[in-house]
Image (cartoon, rainbow, N blue to C red; front, top):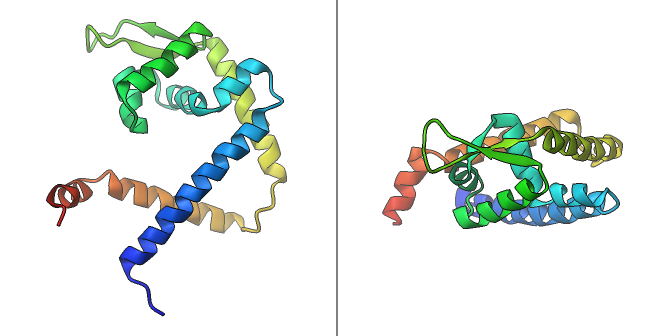
Length: 161
């Protein structure tokens, strides 16, 4: 039986959603024996720390847009990270009201510990895929993400035919 492109994309969406849910559970299991402060950083907040590490200081609205969550939701996460001194807020020369959020040395240290713990376990994982297959899967997901971030997708969704 031949499947349409739409059927195949829907199957991919379903698998991706199931994998996302499983990875959230895996991350929780992986970090449950970590020091309490690193358990918190390993959940949704881990992504914020990682983003600040890789892309540098950002505003709360920028962080929220990148994760497609509300600014208010992101503000709650940033406030928690700031209380734990994992991030600091500083003046933004480009915008008077929207402060920049920057990773602190403690935030950097905590993120490194989380990533080390993840990498140590993943080095032992044997998912039955060759490195080439894993790389191809990552490239495929990146291409799809870029498409859904593109102007072409924006035009399609605006028409909603």
